[in-house]
Length: 206
Image (cartoon, rainbow, N blue to C red):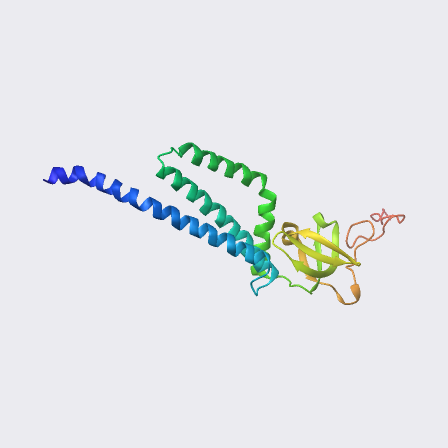
């Protein structure tokens, strides 16, 4: 009897798995529908949250929708006895290629998350950004903090700066009266002289 039970146990486990697969597919489908509804509501501003939080909810639930939809497809194909190994392999390879292609965009998204939690500034603050990627120093007012870009109002214009560049920049308040740091025109701070002015040489022999 013991050997017979050991032989029947794998068959029973397989029967239980076959019975639960339809429920897994139904649950994954319901979760995909719920994610799609939440993403749509967040994009239309149905939640009483900030714009950045609504964008995070919309993009996050959109990704969950894709995951649950793909899971539903795989489970449904398994129910019909279709081999999904090639489909799963193709999906994994496609995900890798998309991640490489969207590396810069993903970098801006993660930089936006850091800006949300670190909060070096908020909407309405007058700040100074200083970085080589921005061409030097940039003064203005933060008008919007998005999931990929920070909108910056300066000299009557609104600029969209990628979050990764903002995260790598030196951020601080604008000095009173718009005073700039004392930097010589030749580009070297504290260096006497400038264009058209000779640099002082070393003292010669007496």
